[in-house]
Length: 406
Ligand code: ASP
Ligand code: MG
Image (cartoon, rainbow, N blue to C red; front, side, top):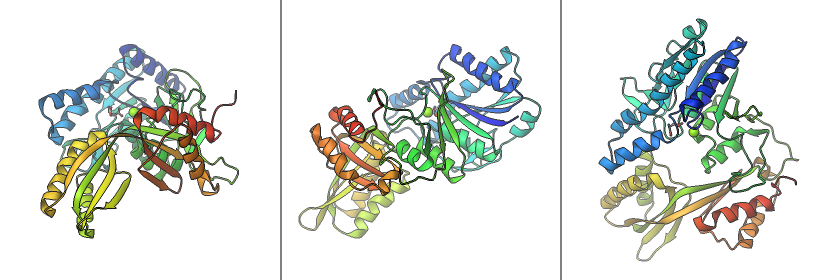
C-alpha cells in the first residue's frame, strides 16, 4: 500500500473520453489499496483560450484578474474527473488549490508557494477517497486567487507530494518520458531511463516542454523523486532523481530548443554601473527573468545592452525598461526580433574537455552562427536563427553521439 501523487497534464484530460481513461488508470491503483492524490491541469488549449480572450479585451490585463480567470480551467477538470471516478464506483472528492491549502505569495500569475497546509487531504484519504486537486492555482493568506506560472500544475504535484511525504510522484503526460532531444525534431532521439535533477532542470529551463522548470527546482530542493510517463500507454517512463555521476558518463545528456525567445536591445544607456544595475533590478522586481546578456561599449560614454527574454514577457519588459530609462535620462529599448535558443546539457561536461569546440563545429557544419552565448557548469546555450533551428538540433545531436543506434 503506497501513498501516490499522480499528475495528469492538459492533453491527458483533453476530452471527456480521456478523462474517462484517467479515471480508469486511477481506479487501477486505488483498487490495489493505494491512497491517491490526483492533480490535474486544465484541458489542453483552455488556458491559452482564456489568455486570448483577456488579451482581446486589454493588452495588459490586470494580473489579479488574470488569475481569477485562469484558475477556471483547472476547476473544470477537477469536477469532471471526480464525476468520472464516481461513475466507475471510486469514491473521490475535488479540492481547489485554496482548499488544498496551497498558500502562495501575492505575485499574481507567477506566484511562489510559501507553504502547504494540505487542507483535509489526509483525512479524506483515510476515508478511502481519492482526492483530486486543481493544479496551477493557490491562494494568498488573505484568500486572493493566484496561479503558479504556465505549466504550474507540475509544481502543484511535486509540492503536494513533498508535503504529504508521498511514496511516489508520477507525472503523466503525452510523451513517453524525457528524450535526448525533441523526438518530433530528431527522429532517432532516445528516451532516457533516468536523469538527474540538475540535468532535468537545465533541460526544462532550456525549452524542453516536458516539465515546468520551477517544479523540477522544487523537486530537487525537497528531494522528491518523480517519474515522467505517458498516460496513453503502460511503458515505464523516465525517473528523475538525485544521481551521482561517474567519469564514464557521456559528455552531454540532451539537446533542448526554445523557440519562444525575443532579443531585446537597449541602446544609448549611460555607461555607469548604477544604470545597468537599475535596469536589471527593475526587471527582477517585476518578476521577469532575462537570459543571455551581452554589453557593448557605444560612444560618448554610452553602452548598448542585448539580452534575451521569453517572447510573452517582452511587452512587460519593454514597459518596465522604458520607465527605468526615463529615470536614467537616456536610452531606448526595442525588440531585435525572435531567436531560438539551442542548449546542450550534461553533468559529464565537467569532465569532458572540448565540448564547446564540438558544439560550434556542429553548428558550423550546417552554417549556423550565434551572437548570444551563455554557459553554466553543465550547460551551453546559443541564440540562433529560428529558421535553422531544427537542422542545428539534428546536427548537434548526431555530433555528440546521442542518436539511437540503428
Ligand atoms: N493550465 C495551466 C497552463 O496551461 C497549467 C498547466 O497546464 O500546468 O499553463
Ligand atoms: Mg504541462
